Image 1: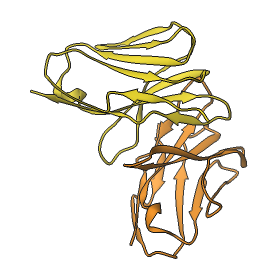
Image 2: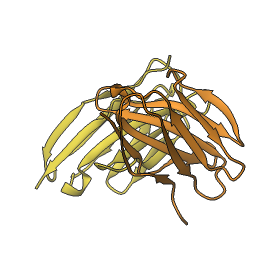
Image 3: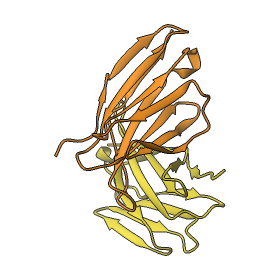
Image 4: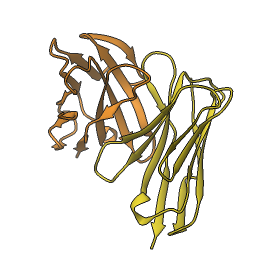
Length: 112
Length: 110
C-alpha cells in the first residue's frame, strides 16, 4: 500500500514569505502528526490532528499552523518565514498506538 | 516536559563489532519506539516496545524496554555496513506525540 506522501520535496523561500506543505497519510490512518527536524534541535513535535481536530500542539510560535481535511490529508502553514525555519518538515501517520508511526520523506525547506 | 537522552551521539565501528545504544528518561512512556533514518529520508520504524521489561529481537537487533518504562536500549550484533544510519529512540507519552532522543549516528566501516 502507498506510504505517506509529502509534497513538495524541496522548497526555497525568502524571509517574510509564507509556505504551505502537504501530507497525504496512509489510507485508513486518521492521525497525522508534523515534526520539524534541524541539526541543532533534532526532531521536534509541531502538532497532531485526528479526524480534522488538532489534539495536541508543540511549543512553536503561532506562525506555525495546520489543518486536516475530511479525507485525512493534512497541510501545515508557516507564515512570515524566518531563517531559522529552515528545516526538514516531516509528516507521520498512524493507525493508533502501539502501532507506531509511518513517516513521509519530508519537505526540505530552505529560507534565504 | 518529557526528555529523552540518547547515547552515544556518534559511533564509528568496524564491521563485525557489537554495539549498544542507550535511551534514558526521567519520565514514564506508554511505549517506546526505535527508528532508523537515512539521509534525505524520513525515519523508518524498527520496533515498538510497550511492556516494562520487554525484549524484542529483529534479526541482529535486540531492543529492551526498562522495567519502569523510562529507558530502552538497542543492541546490534555483528554490525554490517548496511546498518549505517541515524538511530532514533522516541517515547510516546501523553497527547499522541512523540518525544525524540537526539539520535545516534552510526557508521560501520567494512
